[in-house]
Image (cartoon, rainbow, N blue to C red; front, top):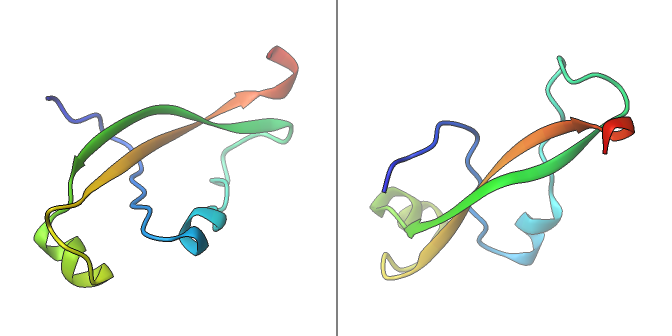
Length: 72
């Protein structure tokens, strides 16, 4: 599987799912945030240590993009 460059999000709890990163400064007003691609991968040893979980788990990576709300 080929990796797609872009932001990564590791979801480990309901609290993490509720938090959203701020929009980049170059996103024009009126844009909406959309998940544009996802993939599932194994948790790395560092992530397992950071989040206190097993490396036998999987995580979903979500790449986000911004679209013009008027163009939808």
